[in-house]
Length: 487
Image (tube, rainbow, N blue to C red; front, side):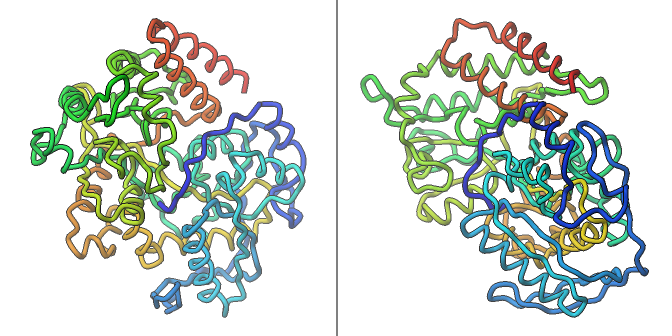
């Protein structure tokens, strides 16, 4: 996954969402029939289709950056242009522009063109720009966002188009995707979101610091108790502050709302019963573990220590400077280390879990494609061709090699250069990705607000350890259940 800044999840009010969905259409082009009209808030639109000739696929060699790649080109008997909003920035945007250019070259003879615009904050999902564009009738025909949780909430609110019929038109088979990816793809048995790739979460540790502390780098922690012991051994007090922390559980992916609870075996939302579940034993134990770090190391001291430290894509990140010995984060951190701290040694291993947790598993972080409701059916079909194009291993290979992100299909690993070269870390990622436990937690119609409120609750528990986790979680559970039922 190409990414530079992890944007905080925005909280959308039900009123704003409803108002935006009640007017406008999802494309600059007017719908060609009633089936393309936007849905009312909370209403799911029926699958749209467009009559085409039988599709046929051929091979073509095109330029992508400074490389020549072979790609598949699918002719569905349509031509025209479509608009595309990309969430990527920096060199990620450069890469995305390369694949847009490659697509345009591949489909030039068929008269198909992708017109890309780079829209920060998750392709407008995080800052309300997408909602405004839907309300104003200027939404793109396609978007890709790095915020799958909020994208799923958009699905539940009726903002995106179901894709099952279109996927058949372009011959894109999603049945072979990892089951965990399908958590975010499907809503009420219809497919709305397509991941372009996925990622796994791992524990990164500094072997040089581990050796300095007398730890066995050949036997990294696998249990929660071992992780705590390593964290304690790596922590160095410096008077009233710390000069090094072994682990800050709410750093990097630990700051995400439901990544670490996943490893504890928690399920914050029960889809079958449509119930928010924040008071299960495993969730309470996660919060108690977080509080144990606050009690042991003093949150004010941790805050003073971490104040001013660099972010994930900065040479001042505490792992890169040696101020933190371990961090829990995704495979993209390998690319950040290569770019900003190439001389820093590191080892990545599966996240240690309690005995009741999900061992050698991971949440799936992914960039997802979506087509806004109301998009002209022909433009939607053309946009879907770009999605299919972007699933190809030849298009993704440099992305995979730089950021260690992975395909959404197991068999596709065999076509990745890292696999062909026998890269041990990539093989471990493949093993983690194959776990039947994997998934994307807390996907529901209040996903964004639930995540934000959960993060606030966790911060309160960290800075006020007199608060009872079970009591606070119950209060939030009741609040979010009421919000869910009001949808």
